[in-house]
Amino acid sequence: MIIQGVNYELKWTIRGRFVFEQIAGRPFDPSKIMDEYVLLYSLLLANNPDTFILPFEEFIDECDKDKKIFVEFRKWFLDVVKQEAMLLSGSENAEKKKTTKK
Image 1: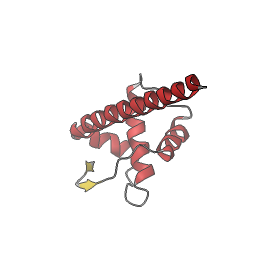
Image 2 (image 1 turned 180 degrees about the horizontal axis):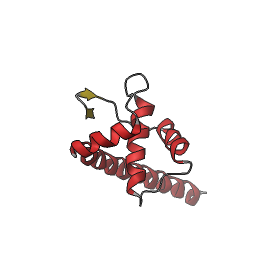
Image 3 (image 1 turned 90 degrees about the horizontal axis):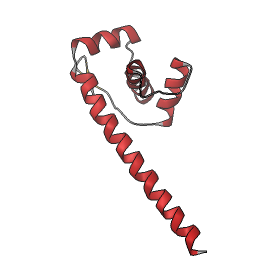
């Protein structure tokens, strides 16, 4: 993800979710737009600890200036959610097969 001409790594990590909860003081709620922005900020902080140094207000200003930042994040995040759903359904199906074979 490119912000202010710098390419940052964007990964779905436990550390990123921890950072979100530290900032927000609660778990992520996908129905809140602010949570999506805070999640993006948290993931950038977690995955780029030495290079992502924007304060939150400046980050939001950048998102206002460059709408592609959030659009790119939303597309990426929807893909992550789909992949996790497939992984979970695959492991649930495998677990069901194990229990029915007994």
